[in-house]
Length: 255
Figure 1 (spheres, rainbow, N blue to C red):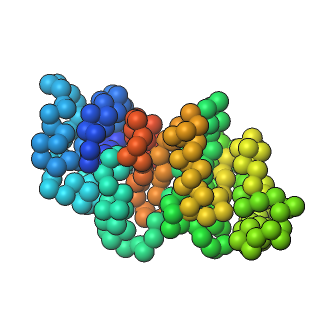
Figure 2 (cartoon, rainbow, N blue to C red):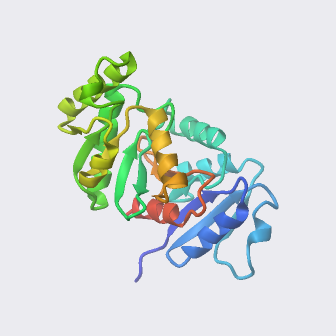
């Protein structure tokens, strides 16, 4: 007897067509339910499509509620608004912050995990240490390189040029020493060659790295799993052209 297909929910806030197309592309491997406001996504669904449409006045609330109740096995944000959806997720999970780590791929096919990627995440040494430990577990699961690279705001020769650069480098040295990782200074181009997990100096720079790689550099973002809620939720950017990989990432985390 074949195992039951996993149930994945994905949100539609706008651009319903690309979400529906992504759900359709993986419908032979997972059962996908698309959460949207009434009439937003239904018109994109073709006759005979195996995907489901869940209409709700507040689709972000419905998606999170079904994830937490177990009505779906995992969820992907899709094109739902970030602030509303992530706020609902925090409330439902009973946490005051979210820890996310993004699975990225360079234009030449090199995959790695990057954190922090939220502008309000990973600002302290303690937060970075947590991201490293959880990131290493995911890297091992996905067969990524096991070395962890810590980035900072400059090279060693830049010490003294600006207090923020100095603080960034001091934090990176401390994080590397406490975690057994390697401080790559600002040299992300070297870190991606040997590291399966890369820790940015802070959430702002991590978000910029993600957006530069994916939207300007020809790379790919496969989604950012949330690490601290006890459920599988993959965050995505509304600017992403496709959510196929994010849906498959969510499914793979259930194995």
